Image 1 (cartoon, rainbow, N blue to C red):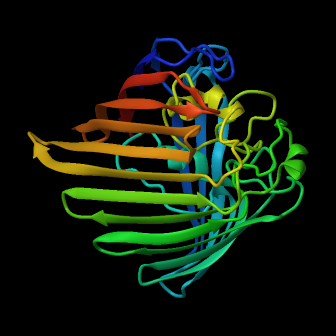
Image 2 (cartoon, one colour):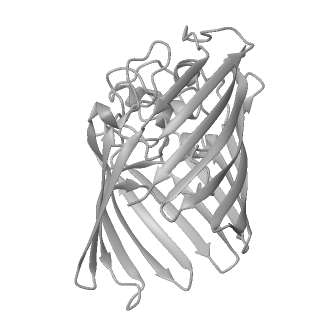
Length: 365
């Protein structure tokens, strides 16, 4: 359950797309999440994630969707099975719909995604295979080139298996490090304004490389990501998570609270139309950390913060920072506030800055 207050200021309301952002207050139940896991012997495991709620996020000016479980839309953002037993042999394979193994994008304890995660974390139908041993994991994934099941991952078309990703990661006792490549992202290289599957063929594929590293001490966690595109960028394709309007809404971004609109209050439509079109490579980075405070009267406390930015040139650059805290009220309930600030330029137009305060209650059963 979330209570949200957003205040916007500066810039020109509705630019560059005419979406007139407003100050807002809302109380929401974004979704109810039911997770199923199953094991068939020692070699096959299954995972299914059912969510009840509106997958398209909080309604802003000009948008009709809400973000309450009472809307009763049932979605399955992830459903897959894995064949393998790494205790016996390192090889394994996964088939289904899930987050694609590309990059890391972890942000400890914060329920709001970083800009890097929102723009580049891919998800969709896939076949993946890899090996894991002594903390080192290597995975190769193949997936469709687009379509309604793909988010942040498109190439020429959605009717062929013509996108892929590779990822190498190491997870140790004190931290992690990794590198990944994806052949098609949510960006296009040739411009164009279409949001249909057929527009991808004309818009041009854009790949990306993701680097990540992190430290994990007993009371302190620090993570960072750096992503750069391997082709020049002239806009977005129809798989982009920024696309939350129109008839071709792609997939489901697997993040809690306000989902696609929560990361950029009042500015989602602006990002999805006139943005990142200068014909240069796109960079995105974030750094985030958290302090874990031992129980105070049996209530654990986590304090967190993050900064993230997407930058193409001086005309296309957006950034946000988030700070907050969460308290383990009882064993299965966490509650806490978050503050998010967002600002920047798109298509050389100064966006309205937004200040959002969010109070979240998460319960596990």
